[in-house]
Image (cartoon, rainbow, N blue to C red; front, side, top):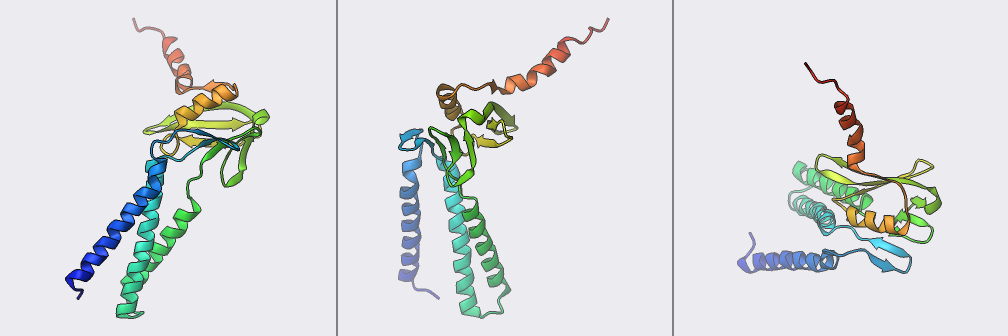
Length: 193
């Protein structure tokens, strides 16, 4: 059993870690698109980045708990191995899907870290807005079938759309445009007598 002073040291270390995490994430809070050397950079939203950092911390915490349990009880602890597997899988999943900013430059736009998502300005076909329940954002289409999805939950899609239409004029299909054929169809129905 731990002494009172050792417990306070652990609590202090966890508080310092949480404070350090907030300091690390604070510069991205509420930040707007800024002009960079290679173009416009659209940062990931603070809440979205915080979710990834907390998931990463949870995965590391699960691995640490598993290691402590396995060292204390031996390799026969099923809970220790289960926590280790969960934490290890969670850390790998978070690192593989870490959110990357979107960049505008002279050639076009791309998601940083994955050059295969680049859409060049001459390939840009149109932009459409979407809304599926609470999820909304824009999808940027190229003539070659590439799509770049910009969800409002992870980026400032509305601000990005404004900058995109100022920087390069493309046809815009809004959510209202998608609903227009339904309203026209209803307007042509004959009135019941």
